[in-house]
Length: 201
Image (cartoon, rainbow, N blue to C red; front, side):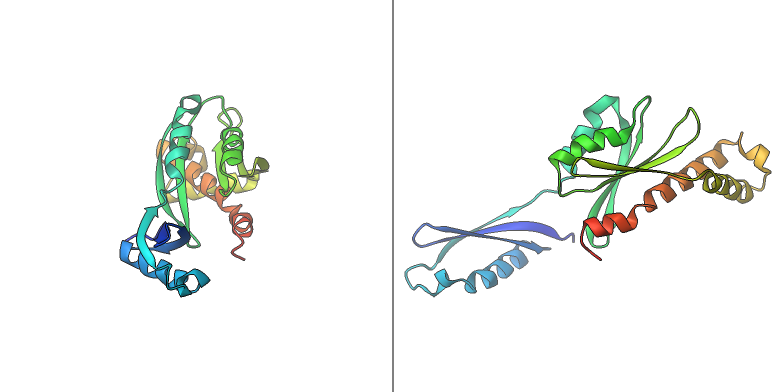
C-alpha cells in the first residue's frame, strides 16, 4: 500500500481546530500518528478541551495538475511512469514534441511548483545533440551530452544487435536503443543535483 501525506484536523470540544501533517499507509495509521502528536500539545491537558472529532484529508500527488499542464501545452503527446527516487515520489514523462524545447515549459511550471525539481533530456533532430536540463524555482541549468558518449551508445547498440556501426545508423531498433541510452545518461547527470535540492545528502 502506498504511503500518503495526510492532513489530520482534530476539533476540540470548544470548536477549535488543530491540524498536523503525517505520512501513513492507512487511515487508522494517520489518525494514530496525529493523536500522538496532539497529546504532545498543551491544549490536550485542559479538561474542558477534549478531542471531539477528527477529519483526515489525503493530499493528492502533485502529478495531476502537472500532467494536465504538460498535455495541454504545445500539443504535447506522450506517456508517464511513476516511481521513487531516494524515497521521494518521481514522475517520468516521455514526450514527443517538434520545434519546442521542453525545459522552457518546465521553467514556467517550476515557478508554480517550487517544491519540485524538473529534469529533462531531449534530442535535437536537426544536429543529433542531446541536451539535458535541471529546472527548479524558475531557474534552468543546461548540460550537453558529449559527442564521445553519444558515439559510445551507438557502439553499444550496434554490438547488442550484432552489426557494424555503419549498419547501426540505418537500423530503427539500434537507433531506439542508442537514443534511450543517451537520454537516460543525460537525465542521470543531474542525480546529485536533485539530491542536493531535496536535501538528502
